[in-house]
Image (cartoon, rainbow, N blue to C red; front, side, top):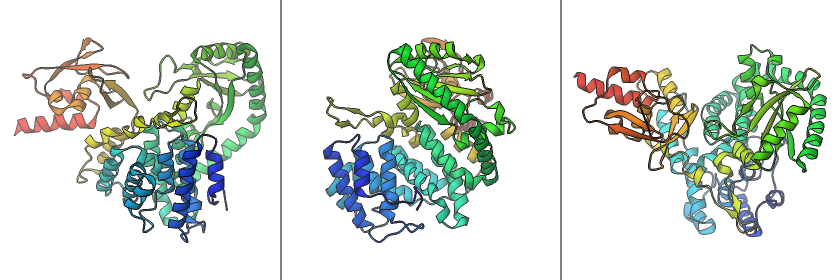
Length: 488
């Protein structure tokens, strides 16, 4: 069996997890493994692998690699125990606690939702989002479940593969992006691409293989020289690893560059992890003193983070042999946030290797889905899909109210979008807004981390030109509804 199909034993799983979890957590996970294996005894995957050892154990391992808590890992082990066995929620709660039982029940609810083409699956999506909004850790478990299913997709009937792969790219990969789970997002897209665009996938893989055949030795030389130079100047050896651009990311770049691979400068990258922010800039100076940088490619995401909070220094250097290599410089916390997003906010108590369950950032990440108004399915399908993707998956910024509440908005949103996001009545009576204490017009675009207070006037009412001042479908719909009522 391939790596994705192989069966993971209890001993192997606990041995891997022993690197981070303490004995009490490992004992509980071991008990969950035994319980799950007994529940699923005799059940097989389409590949012929044992259902539990060949799938559920993989899901738990992915969750461990995402640095999730023991409760979430156990829920991953048991995520199919309610749907595919005679186990009841009470039995789970008695053995593993209320939290695990809740997470497994919610994952089971997601498992009951059947995907259809977007013209017909709005109701299922509404249920899906309502479940995720209660606790976003549920979607993290589901994402790991889906990723492993994609890895073994060749074993299911061919007519189902395209549907599952398309759904994974539209829904699951984009949810991973919203959680800033960059690595998992790339893994889902890479696993789905061969089924969605098989010819393009083969073309990308061929170009990638030819490029790496030429570049690998040069990258290795730069790696050694970079490590030696930084160790000498910094006084310690930073962690450095090599990254090859994911297949799906390379596909998007190649499409944008008319399939000219020589026009892409970040196919290979070195990732340098230094101790603190000061060392980030010192390392940058050391690297620029050794190699010629491409000025147009330098990005300081530490001083100006991306809207999702990503921080790093990016520079592209020329090797002298015709190869351009991107170098990313960041601290350990910046790296963890880039890889795992809010799911990475785990720590240790008093140096005793006791994991703190600080997953609140994940649990509440999708509270806004409860307010998401999905179309009823009777309108134009293309328009409905466009609205869904805008609401869910466009680049987002986080803006605060004066009370400190965080409002999640698409990039390019205005003061008026903010007003409608807080409350419909606030939007309908908005005159302007105080943005970081300065009065601004309703059409003023907002930036990440702005603090906004809406100024209202009961004499104000929406005008048709307001539709040009907003970006969010919610605001547009509220304005249209108000204008239509006044025209009756």
